[in-house]
Amino acid sequence: MKKLDLMPDKTPDYRGMGSLSAVAVIIGMVVGVGIFRLPSIVAGHAANEVDFILFWIVGGIIAFSGSLCYVSLSMRMPDSGGELTFLRRSIGPSTAYLFAWGRVSVIQTGSLALVALIFGDYASSFANLGPYSNSIYAALLVILLTLINMSGTRQSSKIQNLLAALVIGALVALCLSALFHNPGEGHNGALLTPDQFTGLSVSMPGLAMIFVLLTFGGWNEAAYLAGELRNARKTFGRVLTGSVILITLLYVGINLAYIHAIGLDGLRASAAPGQELSEALFGRLGSAVIVSIIIIAAISTANATIITGSRSLFALGRDYPEFRLVGKWNERRDTPIRALVAQGIVVLLLLAAGTLSSDSLSAVVDFTAPVFWFFMLVVIAGLFKLQYQNSDAGFKQDIPLYPVPPILFLAACTYMFYSSMAYTGTTAIWGVIVLLVGLFVKKGLEHLAQKRI
Image (cartoon, rainbow, N blue to C red; front, side):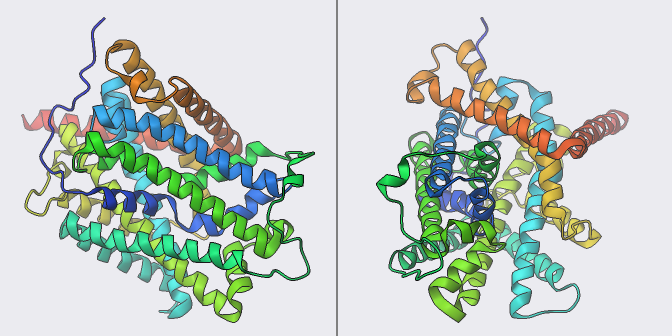
């Protein structure tokens, strides 16, 4: 049987990112505003405190299983194309193109626009700029961070390191403050005790895990850093798995803080659990504290999204001649400047068009989630195909307890794909339409190229 070539066609020498910066980007992608809002929804599907905490632990285990798969793939194909490269090598260029198109046209740019608007909402609470205040702040953030990234990977990495350190420090501070906080009367704020592990009755774990895994989402973005990480084949595994473990510990800690400070019932009833936690711990200063933390987390997520999103756009231009305009790497500044500019323009157009309404977050999730989980499923299926066609490639040796982690993560992806389809219903059709538009765009560009010849 013919073996697949696991190495990229070209491996440019632009490995200027250190391990610490890569960890900072992963944390920025994962730890965003979700942890300050979604735990209340998860609590609504938990029978008791133990169920609630177990949901987050299971989420960490699933994310860790997926990270082991991505480590194995990235160590053999360390490239800025990330999942684009994985799919192109394992399944084929057409599938890889569809994934890249969906990611560039909606998933990544839409996510960046939404995070920027969330930043704008909270920034406006400090200084309102008028009826379009949130959009103005959002546009300014996108422009500023894009310019910083255009100045070079070193500069953007330094900013991301600082932001990630602030986010981690803030979460640890909240956890420690809750540990020494006396919740007083009104709810059972006691931390978990051994007797709570008896007679458990899980209410709706399936629905809870949708929101848990949504909160964990983003760790897979590490794949787009493998092409720039120094000594990637030795360090990438520690970077990704270590980041997932750290994030899991932070999430378990902050959710223990929620239980201790405001109680499970209070968490279920809260529309803004992060604010309630901060107010319980810091009194009247709590609102300002949590708003500041959320603003920092939003900036961190936006910057990390710009970093990884521009890499995927660069890889699309590098691997597909129709998009060659954005497939150039600026060696002097060690960054994909053209891809950064193109990405910034798309996001600004989204903001200017006013297509993102107050319900846009759920709308974007609705029609992108099925597409996202489908391609995640295909990536892991591709790993099994690579292992089958390259029996001596060493995937079994790379992944501890193989094939348990990939099977576990494949099952999780299948469930999330099914759940997102069932949850979104006909809205998921829009994701399919976006992919079909991508096919027409590619055919049109190919036709224009042939006419020029």
